[in-house]
Image 1 (cartoon, one colour):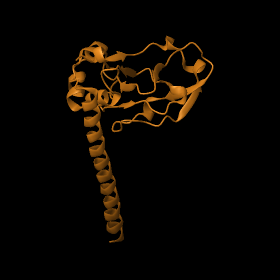
Image 2 (cartoon, helix red, strand yellow):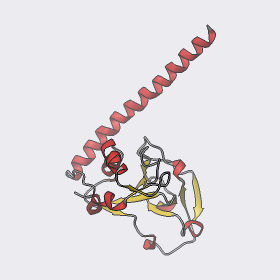
Image 3 (cartoon, helix red, strand yellow):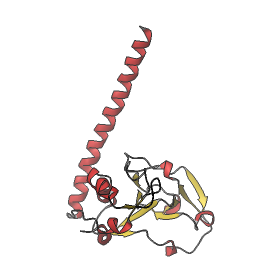
Image 4 (cartoon, helix red, strand yellow):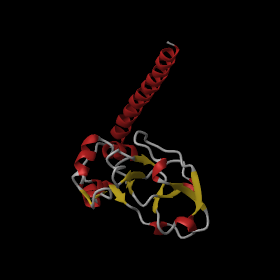
Length: 185
């Protein structure tokens, strides 16, 4: 199915009226290229960020739309947001899963190499300020198994990612040990 059929793209801020409480603020630098989730580090009053920033909520998927962040795969799922709400860079596209899918399923497709490579061909703007075409995103098709199957497959992927992360950490440890031995020689 097309992403636009299984996600609300860039939900409207008008979902809430009260603008006098704290929320999470997420600059592009807080989102990495290799993790499902990020830890919000900043809070602001909603009245400070309501105009001029991108709105998202708990479990929304954030996708960087600008060069080079998009090409580097900068994206994440919003979790642990203060009051369940976040605002951040205007260079995020927000994808809100509907009842047919889960955020992790969407995340896995927008971070895979084939999506990013195809997306590069659907960027507009001048060099250095190119952005992903939102119509390409809305029409991009992904497989849509039953929710139970999505959850099972995502759980398997998360286990594999834990192993990959542990191996990366092990490599760093041994590289440091090698550097220490070489410096003693």
